[in-house]
Amino acid sequence: MTWSKGTGYLPPTKSALKSTAFKSYLTDNPMLKPASSQLTTAVAWTSFPKNGLDAEQTMIDARDKILSGSDVKTTLKDAQEKINAQQ
Image 1 (cartoon, rainbow, N blue to C red):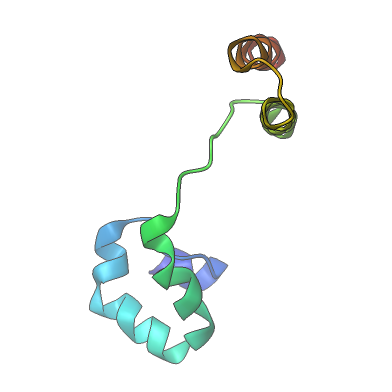
Image 2 (tube, helix red, strand yellow):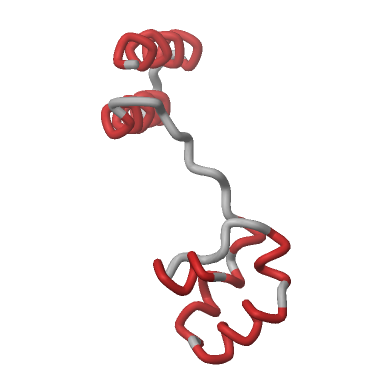
């Protein structure tokens, strides 16, 4: 809770989210309620050891190519090779 209060981010653990301290914090900070209510549908963001933004852009570009009709297997293989080279 100390980290969450200091940063404004939601707690990183399920136990902290369920704690009475966090519930009290939500009461005092109602602007956090929408974000905390959406955690059940949140997905983890892929983290890369370096050049994370470039890798993320490569993934976005691959998605867009696939949605535009590009061959899925080839597009993902190319993206994988490019991301591996970036890291």
